[in-house]
Length: 487
Image (cartoon, rainbow, N blue to C red; front, side, top):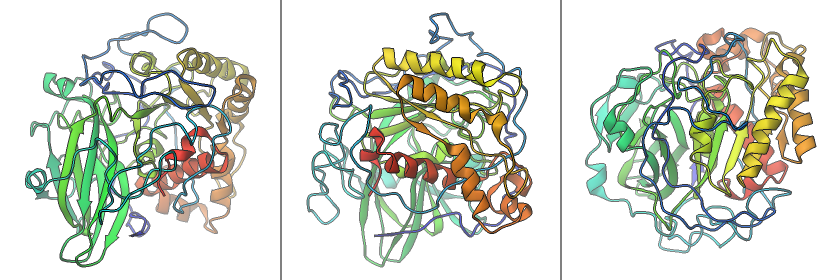
């Protein structure tokens, strides 16, 4: 199986739809629940898989904040204003299988993985306790069927955000497994979307009679598999987890419509080849280990393809049983994030919690940011959830990259050290990546940033690069999630 990156040759994206980094407004996202990994955490050991799945649940109007108070129903608006331009980074290469976690989370010998599934040729797809297999069907996942694929249809690129970011000449195959009513509201979910939310376990068989290149995305331009190249007659089966929320994209944000209810899959490329799909709500034996993300517009699920947050591309790098629930929202700050209740009401012991803030903390100092981050870290630890602190990506205001102290990487590192949790210095990693590209500022922005001019927000190509950088850091540092990175 040969993979190649989907965006490296894309032309400049056209700005459409979403405008990044507004302040928080409207109702919080509801129904994102679904089944999450249960069990009792150890000090880095395995978690159990018990407990019953949910099918989405009702919309959360606040929930309990990490400090014990209630969160406002509309979320706390960020008083620091919107993020302006900036950048991203990544090594761009594929990610390996990782190693034994140094601290926190599930261990390589205990956690459930995608092992034991049957590969496309009928052989064993992986060994217990190791990294998830690249191909195959994990135990309990539904077998892909041609009948499910028969529900799909070809549509034009960009139709109701279908296959966002792809060149107009590419093929887009849309598969709607919930409903066909597209919700144009930017803040309010429909009752159907709320009832059909949850964590879905999905299998797809790619390949066919002709040679193919197939990129798989879900929901609102969320990357699930990097482009898969198949030869004529070749067939490969993959599995992944899709977190379906009542509002696609950001939890709430002007310019980001609610989208379709239920599970939505998209296959795109110059000649995508698909033959079968399987999907089901996660159950007792397939409960995912969820990775919840709290952050801002540099990380969130952006809609339409012009902008891209690295959190929406992170699922490309993880196999079952990991699922990504990205609650990042434009304008959010370390002291003004309105979705703690949505996350804390859904996480269970053994899950993970990625926290990245700094771009919208321009009016406060490092000490205040460190205190805010510490509050959220301790709330996760008290629930048996594994926190992972990440500093913000650098702003590409100049090449070489200038001073980035306003992003509060020092505060994130201090909070991680004081609480003995993993930390990824994405500010430093992205700075090094930018400076090593051999490009001037104009070239960097045109290749990796929204509209070719935005100095803070990436396009999907930049977001994928940044997600790859985060995944590589997880592997290199032997953070507990490393065992679930795709081979």
